[in-house]
Image 1 (cartoon, helix red, strand yellow):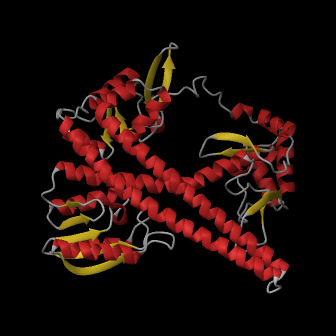
Image 2 (cartoon, rainbow, N blue to C red):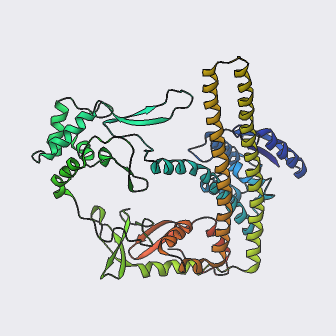
Image 3 (cartoon, rainbow, N blue to C red):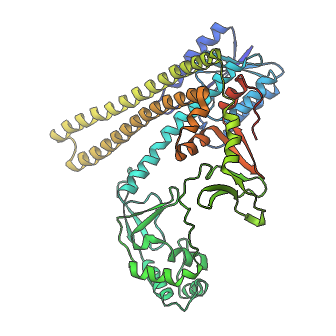
Length: 490
């Protein structure tokens, strides 16, 4: 059988491509495969559309014989369930046979459900590992907000100040700019109570006020400015939906801001007293007819109902929380696995865990080597300074750069440590759900139930009073392999 050797090229801190190929070549010879093509992918498997990857798919589709695709490990081939669907279709058509070296796993047309489950779990956990690495940015942003900093750009009327080192471009402050006087005037004019946002927009534009990119001012921009609490010292995180005090200089007094809010009060809506109520299905369901978000509300202070918001005139049909939960329980009851199947899943998780551990160890070792390299440079550079081979200024600049690089490497090592921990937590959660899904759900608090459903279900829509959804992988496979084969989803 012809084999395509697929190696995803990594950056300098990861397992080398030569090491991947060496392992794969030995494997191919052992399996009696014919080395046909060697393809090195530089494209990311977590972002966008991989052009070269798609070319490989086309080669397989056009081939009149089965092609073996051999990779070092699952995460080298894919970190997306979208790709799993493509390969699964080719497998069913006997177009491709997948060989994963580290997992000691071969997937082809004859593969049983246990092997398919191991494959799908491998993709799931590989993706989980990568997502944990990307959480580094989220943690940095959380720390910035905690320190009163903003993570995005400031609003009109402010500008960002960066340090002067071109190698380490970082924002060090946010200060009022030349347009801040226009912002102050907008608040002062609107507070008089005799001008609308539209009229004020026209007036400011005629007098020379322009947007960030020099664009025309409209009433929506004026409305946004008047409601932006940044000008009084309070930043807002849209992603996390909460406000926090920032450390930059306010240009509008709280009294003036409040006065403008009072003028605008007739346009404001009074928030419902249940806005903060933690509904189990909040944010998880959309309407099957209009696509609007299904919201929860409480009637008679004790009954919880869900319905469409009436978006685009959609008819509102109310479903009780008990009705929706009953449909979820019907699926959770289906997770009744035999001891033999539990053993198969456990064995698959162990093999995936061994592969993940190798990946973790190789990457952390490479990062540590890079860190030590900078430490050695710092020592040599210090001697050069003492001997007069470099100036004091050059030493200070290089020291800041090297220490900065070391700090980033330490953060990456911590990222891998966190991802490694989360990998095992995710694997443990998967096994627990496979064993006692309903028990876990029933005993959880409302917030935990929300997370549980988000982990288990996807594409949730409400069709009248019927909750329709699909199971996330690999739970759909686990459910299909369970003793109860009569469960229907949606």
